[in-house]
Length: 191
Image (tube, rainbow, N blue to C red; front, top):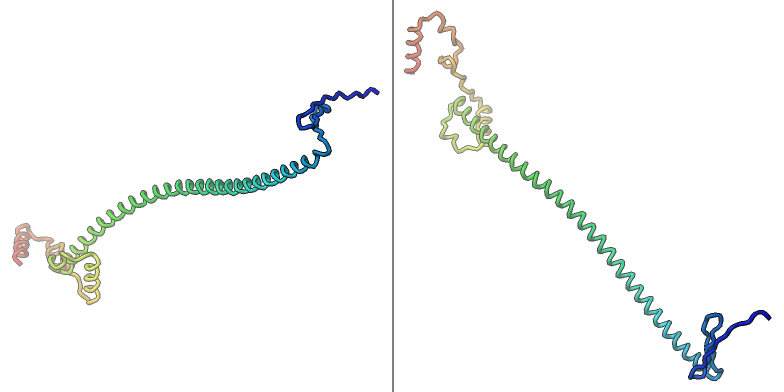
């Protein structure tokens, strides 16, 4: 009484009937055909199960591949970070190499000056022939000086007053005339 349901139906060639109930299509089949429909449904369910299994396998493969991609991205980012750090280290290395080269050059110059001074000192203070010291390196010259000191060889005192360092110095020159000083100088140069 008051509830009227509007129904539309279609008769199909296989003997089934399609009804539209509340906007949804529902198929009705003969009971004799129901077994074959159930059998077809089981086949479809088997196909669906097979497809679901394949889908699960595919999803698993996708997840594995996705994890591999994520690992590769992380490795790439780490490599890029390491490359940037390597560039920084390379720049530092270049700077340090330049500093070492400059220090080596400066050290070589200083060592050459020190070697020449020690050679000159040994020549003048210990009266060693310059030719004997010409080919000696700094370490050799230091060993020679050390050996001389250990053996008790005393360096010749500096001869600033022309008297051979005997200590009389300028006191001998006081009160002498310029002519007497010239004679003394001439006599010293003959010796």
